[in-house]
Length: 416
Ligand code: C6P
Image 1 (cartoon, helix red, strand yellow):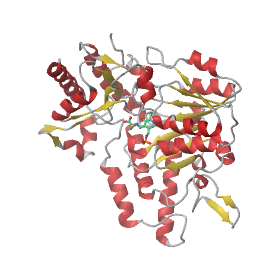
Image 2 (spheres, protein in one colour):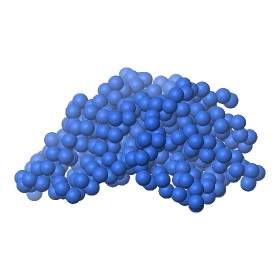
Image 3 (cartoon, protein in one colour):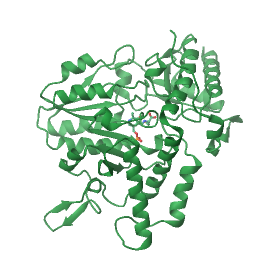
Image 4 (tube, rainbow, N blue to C red):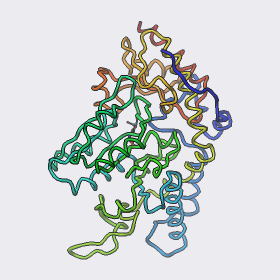
């Protein structure tokens, strides 16, 4: 096996690392090598300072008061929607609903979209999905008599779109697809999937949790109907994510959560909903987190996502080549680094991924082992113990990839 990629670094990692003091930690007397970015990324000082600045000088509730601080907090909260809408190429902030995370965004889409479906209607998902883009559909399908079908994965780590074509029919109402797999790293051709799904009359829901941080996303170019993301995987704080939705669809959908701020009028027997996007944002929202997310998106814009992707390809290329040379290691997903985001998962049949993660932790290296919240994928690929996963980001360097490779070698020897 030989991995292929364009090899050039596009980011000044040394300078970037100065924005992330946490990366200077020592773990087990070794420099921390943080390779669990698909779970969550570290936060730059710019994000931390923006959030502290908000609480220090601008804190109030939003959309509720006419006093100075409430107006200021409201402006900051709405500015964050505008930035997020721009970041993903949405038409306006009406199309950008903030949620707690990608999971909540996918639950919102699943709940609201399935309310009008009838028994026998079909939802097509893929075996590459994270539980967050399976379980909501599965549970609503059980309640409403819907059928969920799964597109298989080919041996090259890509979806079998011919099977998708065969599955699509007038019964298909929704196609749910992960943009980038959190296990295989595969970047799916969402644009072509959306074209196929729309031809059948289905709506397309994209799980962008693992693509939004790593590649430039333009929802209008992809022509997806919904796109979910999490702020904490893209340098932002936990507690905030979002759902992009085409305005005309969001206008028609029923709300998911009910309460304050999402209403225009409430009477004893009925209520009327607020304008978009507030119709889908019930209760006091994550205001400081929105300010942090805004700063994170500014930070990523300044780095340029094309350069972020190029940098990650360089790291993945090195990791793929190193792992491919090791006997007893089986790399998952596409062998071409250009078809991937910045993560590499691999199986080591002689070492349980949790043991491998522990040996690496003793060397200061943080990776994730297990099924990565994608059990149907592990079953589909017959991965009994799951896999080990190293996931990279803007602050990771080639020498950290080398530390990973040396660590894996050591673990294999230890257990070999
Ligand atoms: N995957 C991982 O280590 P939340 O938890 O809502 O922020 O993200 C959920 C989610 C949805 N889709 C994909 C493709 C994901 O990878 C995740 C989160 C983490 O792989 C935690 S399990």
